[in-house]
Image (cartoon, rainbow, N blue to C red):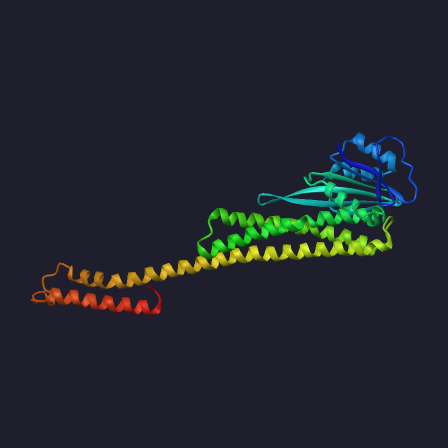
Length: 321
């Protein structure tokens, strides 16, 4: 385990640093502990369990690191699981943050997330009046931090899709580009499935009577819920853009194929005239009309040129050539 930060806060200001022990932590009103850790072991979570009387099932879920977003109530404590996300190329990689919330503690356990909460902690410490609200405000700040991390990721994917759309209008999409579109679409669908439970748990924190959540904190959670809805709306729009790019690419390709087909048909019709005439006079019959005509050859050539020119002009006017 890496203990990123472990401090006690009094009146919204950082006090002393906390050491993990096997003894319960004594805390009074107006102070709380904020501990941030990554990838803990059984022994280390056992110490946290002893210090803050954490529920065994919550400890098990936090150690697992493969939970769906949820909020559980254990007596007078809350256990919240949220999914973090970041881009690795065109792939959305997910991490998990489990948050234990009590009257005098908030503990965040991160799995697979490369972004620490150090900057968030510094920002909150610069506003002691807000941090003095307690663990529920810190919970709101962590949720808001996680949800805001989705926005640049979605915007980056959107820029990539729009770049492919621009390329599609100029030339054909190659097979690999089409596969890339489908991979992006799968990533967007999976992200939508994760954001659904995220919106649900934040909605519970906003609307339900839950332990450790003060009535004055509800507007903050409502703001986070609005952010989740915004990301969901952006993902829905991105999914439609990906679908429209693929459909537009198919339509343009069909249009180009239709243009080529018309051109080939027009040239085939033009070339059929000399082919037919040459085929007729190429027959090895002794008695054929105009075989003895002095200027027959030139007449036939002139007829071929006139008919072919007429067909070419006609096809040109109709847009087939």
